[in-house]
Image (cartoon, rainbow, N blue to C red):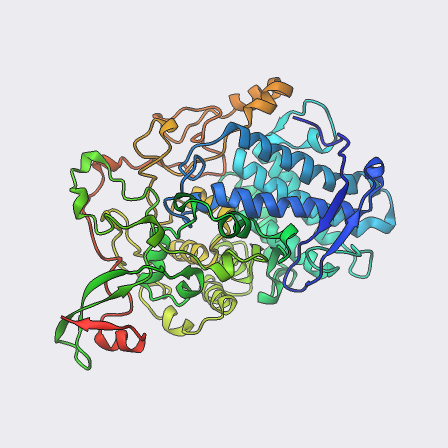
Length: 585
């Protein structure tokens, strides 16, 4: 691996990131021969820019949204649970050179200058955020030697890295001086130091919960400390932490450039995951219409509903249904089930007819990528309360505040009706709707953690990395394995990966001794049938131990149409109120 001290030849850095409070972009010219003399603003802009493009763009699209079951049936090796070694080399290089090197130069060049105290602390917050993604994606990675600019850096353990970044976050939140120096061109918070403190503490709570099973003492120490000062966390949707692309061609979002401007083949377009949409449909969640783009070629549904004004007379109706998600593995089924593929209600449906993410929100030129939201924070606080980490309100109150915040964020009404439903209402359970193969449902138990995890998932669409980590830690999301994984896996069906493999080309050539030592620590596969070592299925310490499902022998597989029926409600009046054109049969 190339160490962080390598001189980069950068001719131009463009600041084009912001949150909701910032609307202006700046361009800064940098003398490539004096890059190490660049200002903190110039260095930080490059670091944040590359983070947005990699984490919020490429990785979110190729890995994270697929592993979080936000996307369904997307083509390509990564979305089909394998990998491209050349791409991994590129990602690794971007993390360590384009992101962390720029950022580390702020710390190295200005740490001893009191006039730059806050800016150095901001750089440490960003470094902690980036390493929190690296370590939860790959496992042990170069940390201490890398930030010290050493050649052939050793790989530090998960625990050491988490302990280090949590301490850096605590130092930053405790030491930032509100009336002190700030970034004159802050691409994230427009110079608002209070928001940097809130970001630091919110990230610290998120990481503490992520590691709470693997390193409980470390997690509780930081989690309880954050929960004792709730005023230092996000306090409303106005505090939501988002990066944003720009509407000019140089700074288009990854999604717009890849899926709108370039117009790729239908197979590689992102479609909304079947089970994610099923959970929105089951509880008539109005957020669905803000998250999901209706199909331009809907399917025709035959449904049985109560006649208008009646609670006993059932009639058959036919109408167009423009909202249906794509299964993760397409229409593939496991041969051992012995099902007739022609009976599949999605059989013959052209790929282009499945629903895609809302174009105005998730495919626009200047779309946002959220790092943390007030809704998510309340679900974090609800779980922290369950763990006994403190908090001024009950877990139930935080849970409901999270739902309220999510509805407000999406600008939809009907939150009270939504919260009153069985399964959504605290202390209640619901059977839900069955999935396509009758093996997974959208039912929610009365277990508080099940509710918190489900709502955090539903409220955080496109935050793929966080939700992948949430699933690996809890195993509570109602999702299925990939029934059409990449052929290179050698598997008929594949669970979501436990990690991403190390880039063996670049690391094997430049840092092989330390790479092999790190691989030797990855000794516990998620199941004896999977390889250990540098494998997709070597379990990280933060991942909950579980037994992968033996799908050929699991449950009673059959095709179901729960996902098609009663989408708008169970009565003719519901169809009328929804403005649906239907035919009585």
